[in-house]
Length: 323
Ligand code: UDP
Image (tube, rainbow, N blue to C red; front, side, top):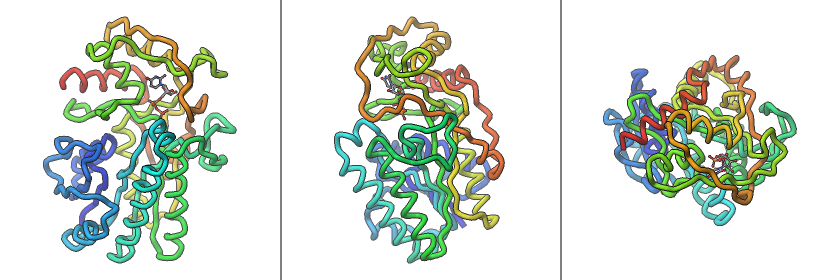
């Protein structure tokens, strides 16, 4: 039986496929290549190009392949874009998941691991954030991911489907081989944007807001290496295979860094001065997002390996320099 990775040509999806294949799994990848990259798909995975909003596409896929579990990354994920074009997010993230769940129920596939996000919490009431804390998203992206989690909950009750929702904090870094890494078009994420300066692609980095209530006035985020996230998906599938109940887990480092600290660390790693300029706040950005991942450690047995910011930025730098 194979594992179906939806969105397996994207950033976190492609890294998860590498780890799955490294662990000996049989892997099928589906991706519409709207934001994913065909060349990021591991050569040993069977690739299907198509969109999860197409029931015909999913039916053909489930008929052709013997799928045991689904890992679902196929969604749009940009906070800023989601505020300007919310219906794009409702359409792809929510309607796409509805079609996917209909197809899974019809083809008797009952296990799914799903990429959710820290953006489900909105402004946190506690730092570090626990899975039991209130979820009041401050942007459309987080709202659609929360709605997807609720959809899994009710569909699970009705049809015996079990899910694991993984709420990522700030995914970053790149595979140790340097073959795959983060490459969005357009790029909006902090670490790849910072690295565009030493690569000569931009003159400076903008700091979105210096008047937050944090130690240096800039936003605090919890940066977690993509290979550690990928490992968590494998552990989540194993958990469901053992009969584990549907559940939600945070995935983060438990350590927060400000935007200015990330820029300073990138200066050290690259040896480049990386000029930074002050810019207005970005809509929908909470001041601080830092995870408690104790639950994933205790229940899934997750053990992140790349928890040092310098190592994370160095792996991203290694990937971008090679491109
Ligand atoms: N950020 C910034 N300048 C940029 C890109 C991002 O100051 O050019 C800030 C952003 O406001 C947030 C943090 O960096 O506080 C991380 O943003 P990113 O988009 O990487 O991830 P998010 O937290 O939105 O998932």
